[in-house]
Amino acid sequence: MMEFHLINHPLDCPVCDQAGECFLQIYYMKHGLYDPRMTDEKVHKPKAVPLGPHVILDAERCILCSRCVRYCDEVTHTGELGIFHRGDHSEIGLFPGKALENKYSGNVIDICPVGALTDRDFRFKVRVWYLDTAKSVCNGCARGCNIEVHTNKHRHHHNEGRRVARLKPRFNADVNKWWVCDAGRYGFRWIDDKSRLREPLHRVGSQGADVSWDRALQEVAASVGRYRSEEIGFLASAQMSNEDLWTLRQLADRLGVKNLDFRVPPAVPGDEDDFLIRADKNPNTRGAVLCGIAPGPGGLDAAGMLRAAREKRIKLLWIFHHDLAVSAWPEAEVLAALEGRRP
Image 1 (spheres, helix red, strand yellow):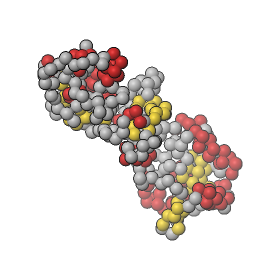
Image 2 (cartoon, helix red, strand yellow; image 1 turned 135 degrees about the vertical axis):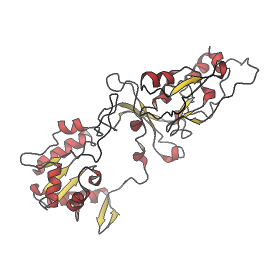
Image 3 (cartoon, rainbow, N blue to C red; image 1 turned 90 degrees about the horizontal axis):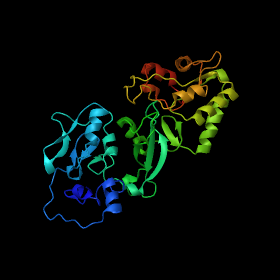
Image 4 (tube, rainbow, N blue to C red; image 1 turned 30 degrees about the vertical axis):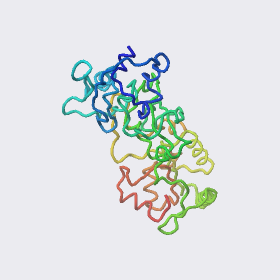
């Protein structure tokens, strides 16, 4: 059967992104190593055909296992893919007028046993055997899908120097099974984004100047010690880890700060479905609740803190992770509250 699979299969292993994790390659190296008996020209099929925004097809490598077809029929129920033509000219393709652009399209890459369906984002970036793997949890929404983070930490000339090369789903029968949505799979570009702040900035006038972490911590400590507890507000975030949230809760208790919250309404409600995606795009809302990130007796919630800052009753508002300008609150109110302050 393996010999039949390889009759028309091209020798693409040196350039195939699936090399190193291709089952056909693994089985041949383990059980095959035979000399080919085929003397006729191989059947040639389309190569490097985009099926959608994330998936590209090399039909010559396809062994017609039909996993991707069944996935689109039975899991996403979107039915974009089919097997067309007959005999050894059969090939995977899109139905007319369709594109593989459902919210879970990237999973067909994972279930393809060969290199027929590959990731357009990962294509030719780095070889899989150069990657390190770490277990993690997706931070795209409150579902908590189990994932693997594949990193390229030792060959900086690969993957344009970015450390994170790709995310893959990790099996968890009770959370996400074998799947992850495309938003979670491709939502890691911010990690190595060149515009990301890597050092603290201290604002002088309208400009920001780089400062050391020691100087930044001293400035923060001095600012917190400059005001009474009722003049201070802590606006945490459900993007923070349990350790960070617990530490902030302890700091608020130590300083007697009652104005503590984490809930900021998004400008646009998050999308949700009955499969994996949740409307809450914060990965740790539950952690924030369990850590007690909530107003103390007589304290203000997030909206109340913003209003108090506008009225100059709160003089130090410490904001974590939020961009209030893109929240559901009117931009004019946000700017009025933060004008002349250092959020």
